[in-house]
Length: 356
Image 1 (cartoon, rainbow, N blue to C red):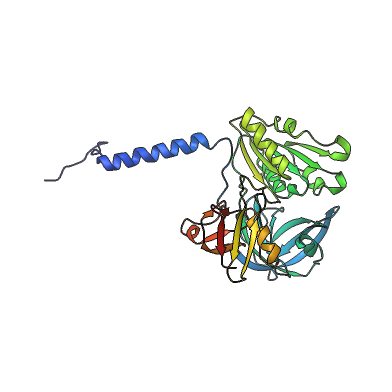
Image 2 (image 1 turned 180 degrees about the horizontal axis):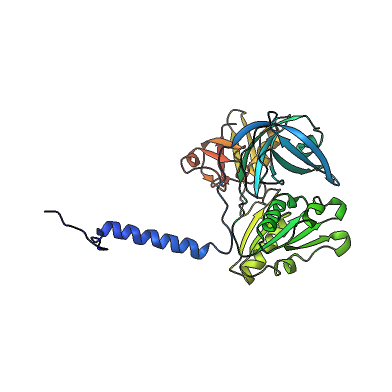
């Protein structure tokens, strides 16, 4: 005879189910208790929307900075995005680079990116500066590794071209009436793009601090100005982000720190090792303070790369031998047995054998 359950009574859970439920609660509590100080890397969508867009407008925004507005040749709507998103741009030369979307997320008809020309860079920015209105660009995305979260208040710190992902966040705060403060650093006002747009954002506090007017900023002092419990978004040179993490970890455990950078991280705890390039029949030595990608490009300069931070997958390479020290943000567990991202990952032993 089956039991009849009435009212709010529920039969007791089996012991195994109860143990699983308690374990789930424990994992949730631990994650919430430890997530406040430093945001973990956000997962990045592995594939995006591939499309060819036309350069609708090219605008000089500051010294050595141009913005490109991109639109579908057919006038079709583009995929939605939220502040902090970027797109992969495939240049005519075959190079692949990431650029933050810095336009209006509410506009479905166009994307806007901004690019600072780096004269002694690897050529990607120079190539984009040579493009003109009417040219076509293949892009993929949008993707987001710099997610804009809900918070009671916001402190934004941008250095130079690091304003590009920050601008849509400030605009969103202004639209929603959220308290915000932006500290915008740069060499000079002439080198700092989008000053006019930022000055039109209401409801917050904009502090523009060019070096030629205020001197080199004391970064630690800037970080102490974050409202308690604020979401702190920092984009710019590595010292800026390192200061944010160091100061806020010591002064405000309720703050969450979110960073995005435009240069590779320095190698931490690196040891020298060798890479045997199977198809090329070459062996290259990797220094303790350099990436595997940099060493490989000394002998194979055409090796593809893009983000150099372990999230885009352009440098993904098959590993034929050796033990891998994975330091990326992209590969699945099943992929880690046989592939690596050479821009950040290394060898755990003395040698790796790669299918290059």
